[in-house]
Image (tube, rainbow, N blue to C red; front, side, top):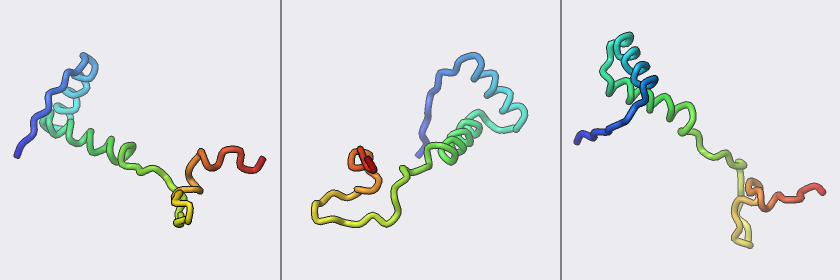
Length: 76
């Protein structure tokens, strides 16, 4: 199954796309796919950091160590 995406590019982005297509010898679709892959790897692929070794508590509250609300005024 093929998926098609339509994008509206401003002039600057369109010039960049055309330059990359010419320099890399790729199709515009491949440039976009690779761009998405790189964006995912560098920014979106990171999961929310949590404290390792969180346990379960009788209160039913999980993430006591990583929840900012539970750490409010800690150490005061």
